[in-house]
Image 1 (tube, helix red, strand yellow):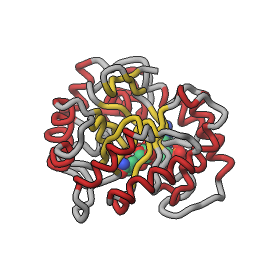
Image 2 (cartoon, helix red, strand yellow; image 1 turned 30 degrees about the vertical axis):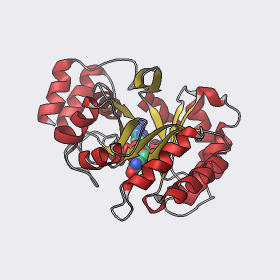
Image 3 (cartoon, protein in one colour; image 1 turned 90 degrees about the horizontal axis):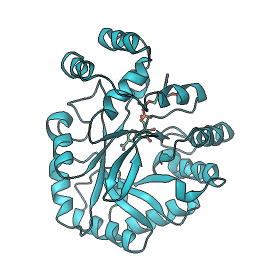
Length: 279
Ligand SMILES: NC(=O)c1ccc[n+]([C@@H]2O[C@H](COP(=O)([O-])OP(=O)(O)OC[C@H]3O[C@@H](n4cnc5c(N)ncnc54)[C@H](OP(=O)(O)O)[C@@H]3O)[C@@H](O)[C@H]2O)c1
């Protein structure tokens, strides 16, 4: 596995596993529990140690399944990210949400706790104070945000003593300058994050599966040139950027292996430029 710097002496794998859809979408679904637990375990057995989840996923059930999957692994070797819903950003609600997540994950700390998205109806000051409390209480090692634009981050930074280490945003070859909640990624958020030591965690790095098949000429050509798949090129393009790591979701072992093949090598600069300029 390759790593990037999260904070001074702490590294984060360039490749983690997403879990949206595991344990349900917006509501709890237990029909695939066994397959889902096996898939998360298989990912860890392949050496994937960063698991990205959220209290939102399956209305908490996803965290429960992650909690079951990780129990046979050494917790210290894992990096667990989870997120608090924008509806839970009042001071006490943040703390209660984190306590529930810890119970479901059956762990006593979260590596990275993210605000899932901004909530214009709740002053960010109280949210950030609660996030700081979680770090002080060692319930979270690091805190970050998701779907935050530059102005949101600047506002949040006013009220926090410790660092915002990451911003998780939608970013892939098909979504480069149109954030769903945010302003432009490549011209705005990513340079700002890089300049302020905030790691970008690219969600939907495969455009929800849209970048895994032939059909985009440049991607197809570059895939052929490197004898890689479209998914591997799309992910490598992301992690070739200084400040970006990826969390593709897959519960299919063959897809997991394929996606992991995006790590450990590097596109030539001329091909990165082609994707940057022509895709
Ligand atoms: N912070 C936020 O607001 C936010 C929003 C969205 C997502 N996220 C996080 O980011 C993670 C990744 O995003 P995502 O799940 O939306 O999209 P994604 O990772 O871009 O794509 C996942 C989809 O692609 C399929 N897939 C993966 N690898 C494949 C391959 N090699 N060949 C063919 N199909 C493949 C998966 O199906 P299979 O399982 O069948 O392989 C799944 O349907 C999420 O799971 C979640 O943890 C965060």
